Image (cartoon, rainbow, N blue to C red; front, top):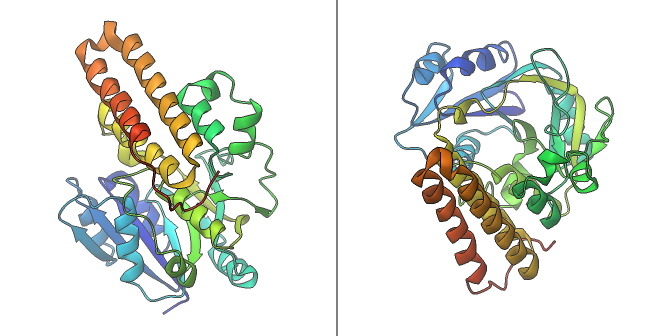
Length: 309
């Protein structure tokens, strides 16, 4: 068995998983798919290719499924690959680079269907309070090249050059089993999705590891396939909930509470804006998010933090 284990987490990934697994054929690797209660033909596509499958009866969440996959494999290096990320080249070189640098995590280049690099996604800095506040208030959409967003999304990154970055994208992320063990794996409190890879990279950095963007490893990436079937209100609850969890674990008390107020304000504005179209639905969804943010802001402060920004 090779030195790399590939872990793929699926949830209703029928349209993508075949191409992902086919892109790994012929490589000397362990491959395992952890399926989070898909109700389509995802599992059939996996078993048809004789790939090892863990079939969860319920959606355990992305972080828990990653940890399942890592624990079920033995190779010293782990490549976390989204089902909509199809490997093109460079996995062995990526592994060599990780071993030589003793990095915490290394992410490769993600390209779209036309071959264009997914700048702003494939490598980022860890989100600061200002970055998340600009995100929730819509400032980054109105003014995407503002200095805060420019820094957060690494928009000046040379996509042809190896670079130290805080957060390589979790869609195509290699890390050592030793580093995963040192930081305690992925935090399963981020349920079901969002910010778990950001948190993992942040804890690697806090533990003294360096993370890198490595452009010689390339994968074609579609993006967001597993959330397209989710209703907007569910997506919003998941995203804001995970954002608040990340801020709670990584920001100072004042920064966290300021972020909570920004989330409450943004949710209130969205509720008011959506009322003519969604009527009571917008008030229910965004009112609930605003209430969650305010409750977390008023909650007694915990004295132990993962890192402080």
